[in-house]
Length: 366
Image (tube, rainbow, N blue to C red):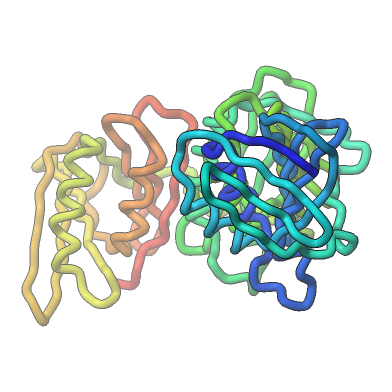
């Protein structure tokens, strides 16, 4: 192999591909490596940890074809040390790859690539949709944080994706809060539902380009294909709970408040929250206010009253402030609606004018 690549392109590709390598796998060095291929399809980088995989296309000059596997961690360190300007060359001789940049040269021992596993692609995928990469990235990064960090219940550690009636619905919950986002699709024919592990979604979001992505899936795999390459994730083999059963169908009180005001009040009040991170919301229809209150016996207490459009019955209800603040990152709406179904019932938050979001958070014991 003998290839010449722009240093910036090489560095960015290495850092992206390295996310998909199992860098701690000492028993199978191929999994902790990045495979570099120069052949009929051009120059590529591949990496996989058997959960996710990437096949990345690189622009560059290919003088000689070849295949080589190099330790991902070492390549990351080299890529981080490169200046952004100019080109570098990779030459493979025997079991050594020489990386030359300007007057510098690094010689790296290769890893046997015979054990490098193939990156699985959905077999005969009948289901395909197209979404802008930038939209998919935002969807995954916002929703995935609401999934459970524990793998005891793999379905709750996943994002539920449903395609029905020309709409893609993404849902994540850790059983304490739930986020649902809906995205309209151009093509209406595809139907299906699947679960993608939330941790995989984070890695995929970090590697997706902004351009259009073709998403295809079967019962076991999901692939994200663009002109710059392909990303693949295994799917969670589990049944997602019927989350719609826990969404209140009516409320006893609703408040509409400016998002920036609620965010500022929450930030101020949570300074005084207790070890349980509790904040009390007080809905006051008579005064037209939504008040936030927090008390910590060690340092003091704080309250913030916001002007709001409140309808219904007065109500005090407590929540973990982290779950309340998480909702604000899910909508660009200037105002939000908070709908409470009563004591001990979940709170529903929506963006005014934003029909794509439904956020639900369970209350704390008073």
